[in-house]
Length: 361
Image (cartoon, rainbow, N blue to C red):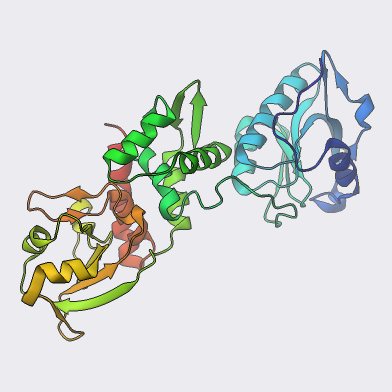
């Protein structure tokens, strides 16, 4: 039975085999790696990609290798599953061969008991109960384009963020409706691209129309590592005699106003901050007109910082308190605090726990 390619590989099998033969062993001369001819690599009722023989300290083992021309987490996971099936029918051990193995892929392979070699100088050899060799850290020599490169940043990040408020959906339409309920509108094409990237990264899984978040902590990590402060057209300091609840009560209905994630910290964590309260606003002019004489721009003894931005993600899933003050979402609060100093990072961990606990509801 011929094996069908499903991932549109960047490199074809003959190229991968040749490059693997030419590549030095990740462990130098201590470990010999022999790649057998593709035509002779046949097992039971399936056609294997490669047979790889590994020799270390006088011990040799043969591996049934599934080769892929791409290196995304979902591709490596699928290759590992195929290799396991081939190995069981060919009296050998499972292995994957891809252009690049990152630390996450290597950990996944070790957990499954599957070996892996890449074309960038990294690898892991697993012989259960006998051998575990691992070499990582060498850079990716075969970078490839990915769907929605910035899926975890800017307005596109609203799509992954909504999974941290509700982790399971029955359709893409339901995802868009949930996003709208939480205060944003995202184009269908943006949702599709973000979902494709999340599937590539094995953060969500699809079964029919059902779409489920499977790695919430990893998703939160990706949002945090991809974070960039929102673009601002104005950033001003002012002194106002109005308490926060009245400030929010006076804002025009057409103006979006919310505390920044950092300023929202007391809503989600125990602690105190000494800096000036900061808010995001999508129209400083309209807010200023509404406040009138209560608005005094100054750098001396300022008690409010107003950041004008139209970036949708900072307003997404904002939460209104009983006194009318609108706080940023716990996800936004975590991301901003995590980008701060040591104390902010400590507060961020409390907010992170809040986000994770919310998924159990």
